[in-house]
Length: 461
Image (tube, one colour):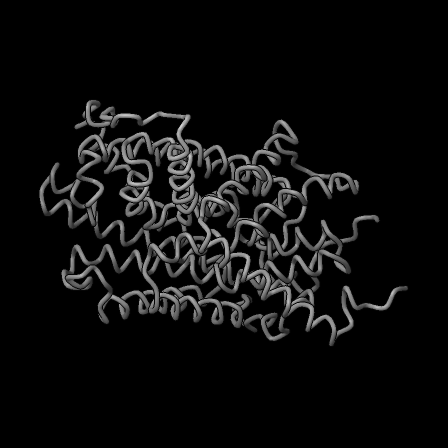
């Protein structure tokens, strides 16, 4: 079957206003939200020692392999919607691609707001350092904590309610603030580096023959990937990228490689000053790190900068995710009112308000740890595994790719294998949640397809 024009009718109303600098900045501030500042104790706890840094390293390898998949597909199909378009074109817009692209939108309705809500919850968690009392004595969320998380979400929706060119400039300002904070942390760690603390491995730390080692590594990778994800954000904005065949692959690969180095150096710096046994029980490891090195005043300043990082991450995520229902609606695969574009500012305002509203609601309901594993379990099979397989399907069908992944097909095969392993590492409960969301989506799709006469109920030509 020949590959048809995969552009979505109506997306030409959007403005191609983002260049390489803006696209890379949006990716990187998306990747560096509050996650790496609060998940270090979780990763160290997953493997019980500083050997957990392997989770960051192997996670970076998976991010690079998967990033090459996104780069190849995004450069060939630079349209609003990202994975929605990739799956539709690979598996056929009138066949299985119809079902898979619908399932992507369906699971996005759950995991995208969960992902952004995790940033809002993390924002409120870290704010407790500056405003003690947001977190209850039992570690639970107070009403003030929930209202702060939801309120920040509303502010982000308000700020995104404008033209994309203005957003591109704002993203660069946020980029400077976020990475200024990281540079300060790394400088403090390197100038006070304690190699003995980093090499303080417990007995049996590298017992490769024990199941516990691999289970711990899987859990550490799962949390690390939560922190790495965001490199794909530029693909959701494909219709708003200038020179996408060049910009999209470069923005993805630059952001992954830069963040991998930054994460590793930053985490080694932190556990060299805050020994890993102490880090396990730390609520605000970066604040404690700065307080130990430079005093309480510096700790308050870096905490404020971390809050900016959390804000910037949700900002970038909401920008990208709000374009997905819009693209699906333009294509006829979702409710049509999501395709509406603001008459003056030229952005999908209905989609932004809907995705942002659900995000705010989730930020009021859940705890941080609950959403991290759940959102990973929900998104892996469709957004990552099925999409990596799509590269082989499109290659076989003769698609010409302006960018081709390095060492093809090894990165795509490695991504499929590692993502499948991570899905198993989420555990029985979250695997069932992920599969349940997809099963419910399939049922809704079949009911809708029956009424509309679409695949698999469409009349044969």
